Length: 97
Image (cartoon, rainbow, N blue to C red; front, side, top):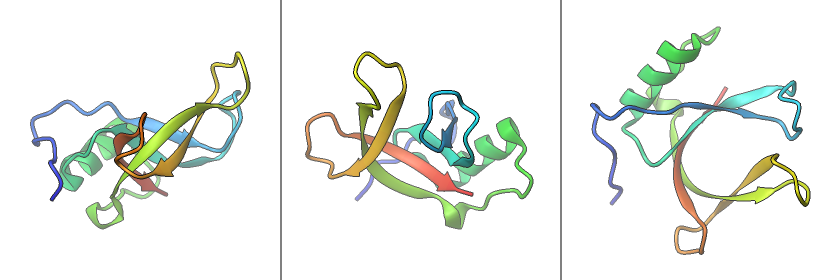
């Protein structure tokens, strides 16, 4: 059973890009920290980013990720899929485009 944030929650959507710190890499999708209702999540993505093709709730995934630095002393961070019971794991809602 997953605990999803309610529809009224404000969702902070972030871009998911290929590895690289210059933010010029290809856009892979969008994500938000925590597990959100798929309909609320796609509404937030479509409203904030206005993608070429509107995303659909069937494309939304819930996982747990872990954040790590790409290089020592770098502010460029990457994410890895992991199990919920690993120290440092956090819930995400995401969509690949």
